[in-house]
Image 1 (spheres, helix red, strand yellow):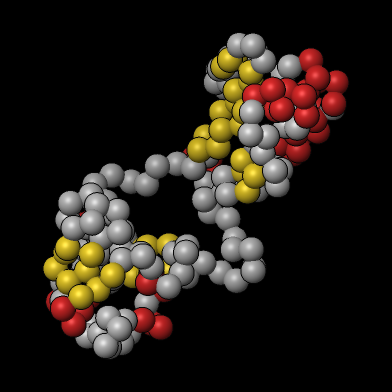
Image 2 (cartoon, one colour; image 1 turned 135 degrees about the vertical axis):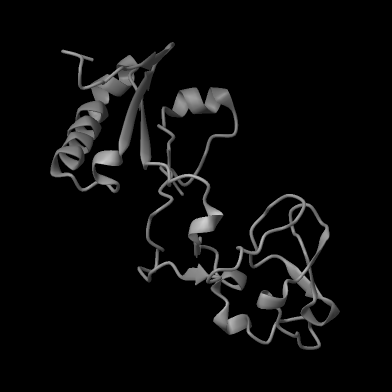
Length: 189
């Protein structure tokens, strides 16, 4: 996730006076800032390790206890038993001996590889939602033309992930919120 500005106004008046556009770019399948690939984690045919109460995934902020036989969920604060396939003993500081081989315990971003029986339906298609400020100052700045032509180019090049399954949504706002129906069977939006 990246924000378009380093400083965010702390009041609505300051926000109006500064006229700084604010947006957050959310790119869940993006690359790490360092350029290195996102590590993948596979539990083979075993279930992905998740909290039995809140279903949170195992992550760098859980804490192990009882020589690794339990782990404490950092979200709901309950203790979970460590399954036999995931067990590793811990040192005197409760750090697992296989810590360096487990990216899910030390990396902020990981891709969990789920087995087929983990999914009860096919994966959802990638969906991109673009939200445009169409107020008069935004139109005058020229950003809408630039953003629209850039997005159009990416769509026409076919470089968006998901191929024909990809879904795209456009929303616009000023004092109102505008939705657009872009079905291919329509003559115009």
